[in-house]
Image (cartoon, one colour):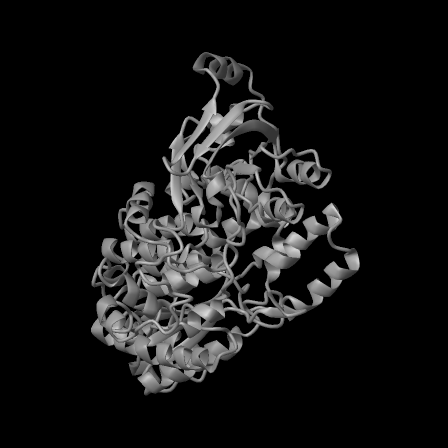
Length: 547
């Protein structure tokens, strides 16, 4: 065992003395030492209940014949951080989480690892760490929040964000928004729809790193407690069998995750995170992979924010195991942490509700829920949640309205300076230029709340999983890395074609050359974490990982 490094031999007597001060017994000195990386805190709704889950993991580890050691990792709530400078810190936290788990695991020579976490950057960071360290590991995602309720309607956080736009547009009063605010989020768990947190929980299970049923189970359902307990026991089996993350996170399992993502119509952020995880696992994954799989995978689940179904509906329909069942004909038969393969799980879990997980012959859309666009405005790619775009906006050409930052764009939207048909361009918000690649949920929600139907929003930043409509993000290269998006001017014609996967800037090359020679990027005063991040981070098309 790896832990023998700190507990065996005469030279390790001082190390053992410190371990004995924790109450470790002679018998436990001969057992596997297993870390529990717990993202518990009491400022994030998705994390406030994780103490209970980690407690069940501890019970399972003890029952399975291991010794649990729990340590904390940070967790940021993207919703609380949204719409202000705090959002710039969210994506950098992913790298911090991965690094902190590596530091704790390697310095204490742990034999195995259970990661307990929820929300947007926490689970990707944990998966990156597991792949990097490559010791037996399993992930327990904390589960989704139940829907809110008011006046006969189920609610989610996105209703509140869009309510801000409705107030600005006069279709909702401030009192009505206050009432909505008080009843939309009824308790613990990640935000209710298929937003980034829940999509990544599903991706974790789809790539084989969580036990069956974990990804879609609500935070308050006892099934979560059972899965946590079983995960604690199972990590002991993974150690005994020497099954490691890179045995599970393979080219085949990552393709399974992408295929499940396409069937679900998940968050655009999954492209960024899956590529980062693949990089840590040394698995080849490119933007072309997403388009190839999208072409052969129907969009089967009409989930929030594009459709009516919250995550609890997906859980009741059978969750990810039933998605496996539906997609069995195109999935790779990959190993999972359960010890069972993808297809073994698929055969055992038929679909329980075909209104939620649609038949292959009756999909929401014929192709997958995400598409990668290329063209003169995005030579290295951009991402759109096509499953959340009305078909009449799959092709559009309009004049650019350019903003060097989210704040200016938000002010223009709320003051009705945007016209139907416009193409809003928000730039210098990429990984380096933001820095931190902030999400644009506030502007996209405001557009929806104000009733716009024919406005496109394009950015080198990111979008929340809660975004819907013709919103194209992750434009690469970003403006701060001399991408063409930095050369766009008000009035330029921009064309989108989701059918052909194109994003074009209709400006002559010689004119762009002139603009490039006189371009003056905005100067931002940054320091600390953000300054270090801006100096190290790569582009979105490769996962925004450190170079």
